[in-house]
Image (cartoon, rainbow, N blue to C red):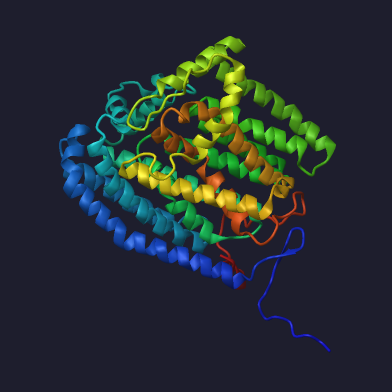
Length: 480
């Protein structure tokens, strides 16, 4: 007797493990789209109105803005122009709709919530970047690879040659943050081998990612570099496209342009993963080794030169000095005894790494920012714990997941020495890797299929240009 087949289509991904029905995926995307629409059309205008009327005058005084209405109006006009230009991006229509909503929310944050932040926290990074940057007569002369503060000021100085509006410059940096979130999503699509548009909405409205990349500062530029790097890594490890090494190099160059040590941190896991775990030929691994090892040594030399480290003793002393320098502010805490040996540094790594990734926890920092940070961190920690409970450690056999875990560990091990001293700084620094942490946690906790197998026959993501048409477009929407 023949059994009736289900009318619900199922896809086989990579290794042949059955995926969840597409209808459930579409329902998830619809939920996040609804949340984003509410935020875009209700919360964003309210934030803009309250920010401008309640804090605009104080913020304008802090930034020496003489005509607030003119400065703000120019910023809103540029934000709307960028909104219109999104409609012409060479990407699928569903992506443009999502980015339109996400940009409207970012407008609310940058042109509303951020004004309150700028008014309350006078003397912050944005104030220095703008006031010093626009005073530079020769901005190009101030550029120094790896000197983030000087480079952001130089960028502001160059933009100030075109516009004197602080709000316009802030909007441009905010748009860079949106582009970074989208590139992270494209990297996730390569890893999954299919569209999952809900992930774009989640990346777009994750509080820490949204807030810290919607301002004039280092974070939007650093995030753009790391996003491009992740896109290249996904193409290299999952699809084994060696041309993606160029994306990796460009991403690391952008991130290192602001923070020199990021090159060393992020080149290490991709070299390790590709050589040790990728399912490619020995000849290809040898070819990558010829590129990867010199890149690692170059990044290490830049790092050592930047901090004048020539011996283990200097490494210990520099680490202790940098760590202690961040022990300030209401969320500061001291490391008893500091660091006086390599053993003390190695012993500290587990607690430092945990702090860098998951603290402050709820109620550790008793202010509004600390409470919100604690809630987000608690969610991320629960995702990882749930995923580990559900899957154990067998997922480390997947090269791209091994890369994600290695990247998070190496980053956290290094940043832990700074993050432990100041929990507020820890939350801000973690933005650099929060997309990787979030996507890994979501996969481990909720995915019902394996990732595509690495190699030339792995399922490839749709090309980045041109919307799908006809039935293909309908199928893409259903999969989202």
